[in-house]
Image (cartoon, rainbow, N blue to C red; front, side):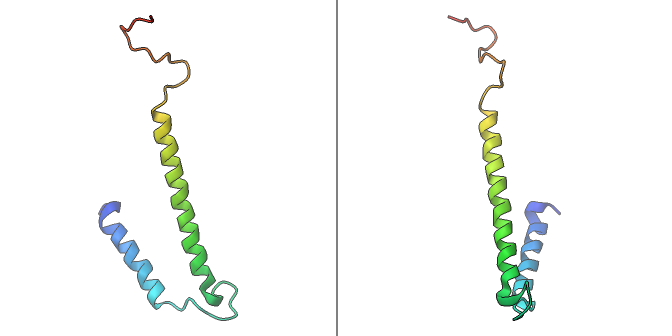
Length: 80
């Protein structure tokens, strides 16, 4: 199995199953009152995705800029 295939689909299925069937709203419980834990978990996951996107964008931008100490001239090119 690859992550982009069946494992991802299985993970999504399990999350949806838990959200649909688990007792996630327990009045008076410090984490489950009004299902607060669910909203916190989903918000936290979105923050991870946002961080990864930021890192990939920075990595892509960095790969387009020559490193320090490199003049940017190609071999054989004159410095006119």
